[in-house]
Length: 420
Ligand code: ADP
Ligand code: ASP
Ligand code: MG
Image 1 (spheres, rainbow, N blue to C red):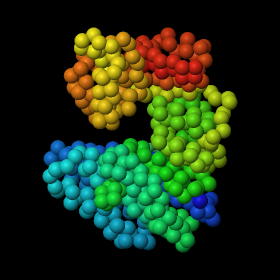
Image 2 (image 1 turned 180 degrees about the horizontal axis):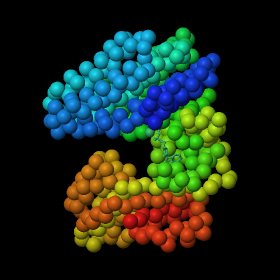
Image 3 (image 1 turned 120 degrees about the vertical axis):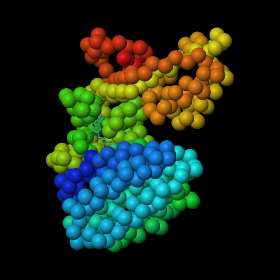
Image 4 (image 1 turned 90 degrees about the horizontal axis):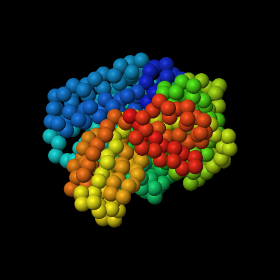
């Protein structure tokens, strides 16, 4: 059994969905679970629907959702002919579910509605792809991942219940492979034991692929991307970046944790725990072998660079000149936990704490307000966090000259610099 994951970039046009089918042609005789994300930037578009709904701008929410409907119905026209009616009915069922909700008034937490609405992106894309593959004679079954991946009710960041999911996979997914070699399902989403939809965190489809690889004891997982593999930097930022052919789980988890957007950080653990290789390959050029990620250490690592923009630095100083330790610091970590903020960099002084975080969803302001009851808070925004691994002194000297570094942290193999 293999697990393939196709992200938004690999399903955002007719040509790309064609090439997805082309890839599967090569694997016709193998059992493959196909995990797909929402098409293109659909999740961003759905987030806007959620915002409008939650601000009780129901008309706007419905209008924005209409655009999403039109996009998928248009894709359907190009992709599906034979079973056009059945596919349309299926899409309409998903549309109706969301539209019912959009007529309501929000009475629950925002994160709850977020998951009920945003999950439709993956349901729509996987439905279209499943019908399309069937028309291309790539026989497959479609399954709703919400019948397979059980999570708790931490909406927007569902925690997987591995035991229940394992049971559901054996009962509901494995039998489908008795009839067909291919099964299509969704990444990023799951459901609670009360049948409420949940999501696993933005970009979470990679993680879903890893969850399935783990639960199915797959021989490998492959993530198909619009890049040649894992490169030593984002090629959109650094056009000279090079593909790294072999990487260890440890190296990738570090890169992803520091913000390399190529793989979701949670993807590695399930694979590492069962020693399942992860391939990152280009859906644009099948001749390239891409990157293989295993437990083997690569002793010839090039310098790796991760640039994270849109950072905020909070400087927290104790109000009464007491040391920045003990109770106020414990309280601060409780607040971070409550707001679901993972600091990207922290540093201590005697009476001061520095915390660098992603400046998103007004979390900087929320954190500042809550922390201001026991710290004097200062905020700097619009910063960039640069993380370098396997760097040389020469490289640092060349690059440090032009940058205004506000904060720096260094271990033997990693340096992090926060700059303006
Ligand atoms: P998808 O959602 O389609 O799976 P993403 O857009 O999430 O794909 O991830 C692919 C993108 O990740 C690439 O287009 C590239 O710009 C970016 N990226 C960031 N860092 C790296 C890296 N180190 N190696 C390769 N790609 C990277
Ligand atoms: N569609 C989701 C997102 O854009 C999940 C994913 O693409 O992995 O975040
Ligand atoms: Mg992605």
